[in-house]
Amino acid sequence: MSEQQDSPSHIFILSGQSNMAGRGGVIANHHIKLWDGIVPQECESHPAILRLSADLRWEEAAEPLHADIDAGKACGVGPGMPFANSVRDRLCGGGGGGGAIGLVPCAVGGTAIGEWARGEPLYENMVRRAKESVRSGGGGGTAEIIKCLLWYQGESDTSTERDAGAYWGNMEKLIHNVREDLCLPDLPVIQVTSSVHVVNSLISIIRVV
Image (cartoon, rainbow, N blue to C red):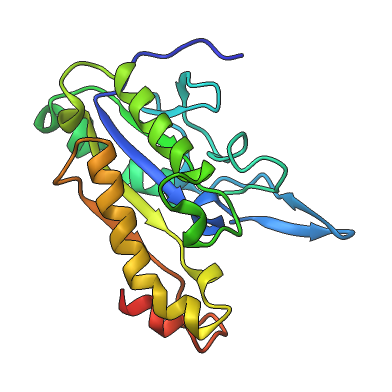
């Protein structure tokens, strides 16, 4: 087990399904999916970027971020590290008041938004991890530490027109519930969904959200 790192001052929750969990560089090798181990420059580790492990310890973040969260699946690179590296200088430099960035991986591949409803195990685990990240965070209140929820999900809700049509309402409920349960009524939520290039006629319904 890695040594506990200093607590971060800028926390970002990473949640959703496989694209957030990280499938970049995952290849099929004799019917087994494996990560090729290649880390692009924008995904490289930095001492000012930490991650909350599955056992709730802060450690220096490294790809694959979700290896112990989306367990049992081949995880590769995802959007978490490029995002953290892109905002690192602004948040951790003089203008951002110093401190480290903390990433809280919660995403699980192949999950539909219904599995992230309040009361479901995935949702409750996400909220629990977010709260624990603040308890071990570096100073300030919850609103001063948790900066944003990054949400990348939706492809699993395009199997039927009914699921796709219900996505907007389910996403609204999710945002409301997360803000309420974390006592952060103004928590920013950055939502990303699959590209229009995905071969699925219902993806455009999800993208409207």
